[in-house]
Length: 152
View 1 (tube, helix red, strand yellow):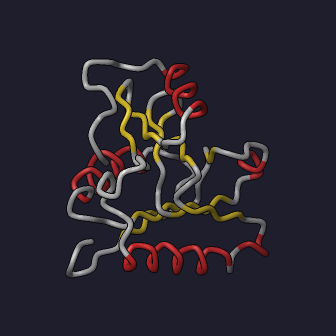
View 2 (cartoon, rainbow, N blue to C red):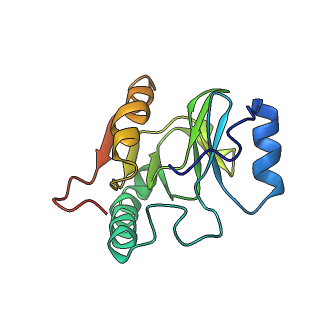
View 3 (cartoon, rainbow, N blue to C red):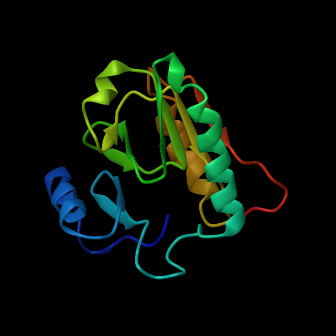
């Protein structure tokens, strides 16, 4: 997760939604704080490496194999509601088999599986705050992370 978009400003959930819809940048939202994750700057995110891209692509390919079972998989550009009105993130990949998720084109609320690709700059958050909140999601059955020797 990169720097907060404006450290002095806290955003209401409604302001966060407006901020994201009106701009070209994706933001994660954590109870009033916003974090740009897709800034038009090459070093804004830990991602962008070939290895990260390959891991995300492979996860998506594996998840796509489940589509014939009434599930849908999405990549890192689809938002996940970890805590309603409070915590919104963009995991590397999401699998949902819940029909309630099929109506919203931009948001998953009832994931079955979440995939995160760890990096040196995000591993503490991904294995701490994110995992803690993911564990509270009643539909989530699995949380996968990349535990390679060399973090991206």
